[in-house]
Length: 554
Image (tube, rainbow, N blue to C red; front, side, top):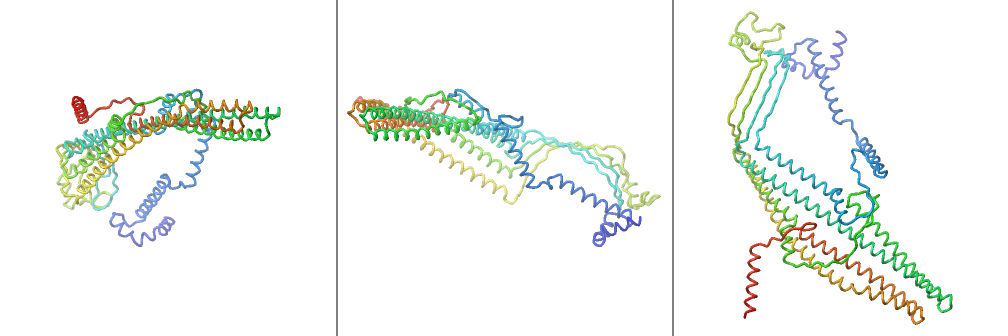
């Protein structure tokens, strides 16, 4: 006992000087060593529990440990990717090989592309938001339970143990328009998510087709350089033969060798461009860079007729950005309704069922005893710790009630008005953004049509140029072998032929890209969508036809 008292004096000296007296009196602790020891022990337990919670909550985790953990994960991830060994919890890119058509590439991209996968997850999010909106109109039930132990020895001593179980059910009847706005917003968000997925799919198709065409162009240009190398090697042999038989000069041989080296350097560069284009294509497809594919499609010219009005109508009707803008305006309108509902009443149908232990069955006699109204023990308990609380029956009490509850915020400091003003401003901003996007779509459609027309003219100008260049090279080679021409004529013809072939392939590639961008601008990339002609456009078209017929009759 003596050792314990000394320990308590050293440990609780500041507390005893400042708080111990008042706290002991207010909490009902007696002025003895046992009570003080329990009081200090309670404080020590509280401090220790706080330290345990702090350590369990991450207080001992440092930035260095986090960095080590992340670096370890990246090392394991890199080893798995490079060794082609997949772990169950990792998403490994697929390794493909063999022939690859454009249709197969698009299909692979839609399966493995990360942007499409992200858009699909947003569709799932939209389903969750719809469920959340529906929940505002459905009833809710809440269960709660409490259990307490009371060791109070103060003036009034209640029951040692109390328990309470409660079940509360609420059914919204009217929420000021909030439920309808939430359901409408969920439907608009779901539609917007579908259009975002459609936009992502079109973006992936655009990127795949662009990069596929880029690989085809790089491959054709590499073939042009290969053919130029063969022509240069053949010409070098001709110059060496003429030098051997004394009909040529050393200068012609040197010039042919320089020409061959230049062509070889160009071929190395273009072969590297093919590899780079394939690497970009594989990344867009979402497959491994270790894949080995061979493209099966060819870079070919296929003319496509397009006119201004149908394309413009198609773009304004089906472009995903415009449909997303419409959904954003609808969401902004629903947000205005939601914010304005703060000033409207809310009505609920509410019911509660409660069980309590022990049951409060105090009578007036017990109440008088508790406050000194008489009795043998004058209201003191057996332990002498103070007044006793009225008696309680050791049974479970039952309480039930139900009715209509109305909540109405009469004044909230203009909070709802401020939120409503902000929501209306957001609505106006979305309307302006949609108008701006309509102008941008019309501009992109016009640019795509102009680029398509220019690319078609470019192809037509280069279509017969390759044949002429091939014939010019053949004549230059014949003249050189017969001694009527010079080596410079042959080299110039080879350079002209390589340029003509490169220009034609570039023209075909530009035309294919222009077609692709027109499909993108009209919102029909990879889709077969009809053009719906508005009534005003139909009437104006019929009026124009009648005017033309009248003019013809005159």
